[in-house]
Length: 191
Image (tube, rainbow, N blue to C red; front, side):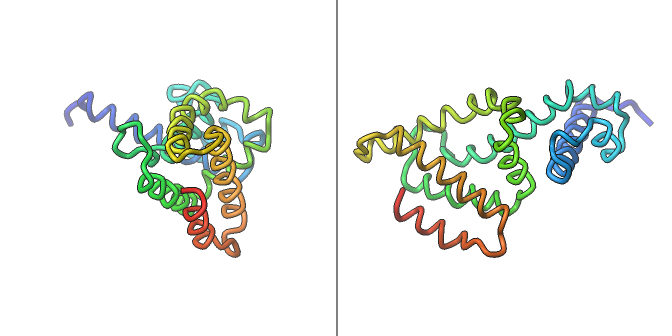
């Protein structure tokens, strides 16, 4: 058996790191952030607690990585061609994609919304999240400026709050929440 190449080692490291994040996400969603320990996550991932620290500095770093990855995935749909301009079609694509992510990755969004309700925990990752969110807020402000809105910043913030509210209601009550109808109405009124 020949030694592994650097490319193979990098792939193994990336896969192991993702496995830790996936397990942590499930565990945080199931038990809550405060009740979840690094030891629990290590056990469920089938690695030693010491090895966890080769990938993450601690539980806060792990949570921040999970939240950053999820938020970046959501906002990656906001400007797919990366030209710095949000078009009507891109806005509609974002709405469809964002709520599809909520359907597919409900554990992440349950964790996201539950953490937002815990100021002591949300402080751990909000500085990083604000760095991720800031350029996308600018896209929405520019969008509403071009539409002639009286106060584009308020419009952008309102839409963000609307998305959060819709997402919250959907992920915690998916069987009765009329998501498809709500998406259609949001597009009609805000795009």
